[in-house]
Length: 231
Image 1: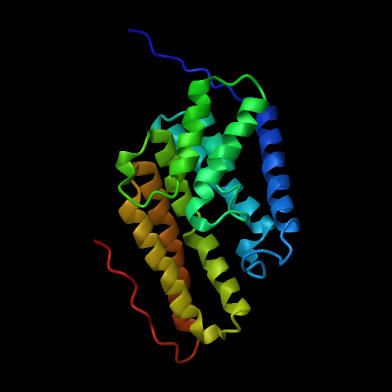
Image 2: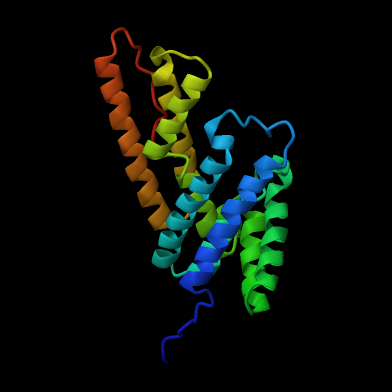
């Protein structure tokens, strides 16, 4: 029996056009809000951060998809659209809104198979699902794992430290905040399914643990905060 070869329908040029569309859509979402949007003074609620998060997730999701045998085009396309409505829709409906935007874009740009569009929209619509990831289609799962992983590790630690500054906290609170990143990482490990995502999660948590240990060693009178116990 021969090996099945699946043709991926999206060119690099088409991906670049999608990225530009998502970037411009997020920027317009902020500009169109009279009061500046929800918590726009936090850097991760800005169009710039949201677009960077989307690119991070797209890169991670594509890597996981490649290792796990999922469709890279479906996964990457869904990742580009997964948070496109984040700045204009309520949190509990942003995934559904993003799926509709993705459908409209894909139907209007190019001649994509309906099966491809449906897979992309399903992944976008389900990416906020809080249940067992094994219940999800493979491409949706790759996207969800990548979305979880972008919030842990060095990137998650920096975001927590930025949050401290915006909340006028002192560096003495840093250990507690970094501890939250560790908790988030442990949660990610408990939820991810693929070996690829689990390996990345462990690697990123290790970096946070190192930083936490250095912090406790260098800052006087800083009380160690016990990290979650690995099961």
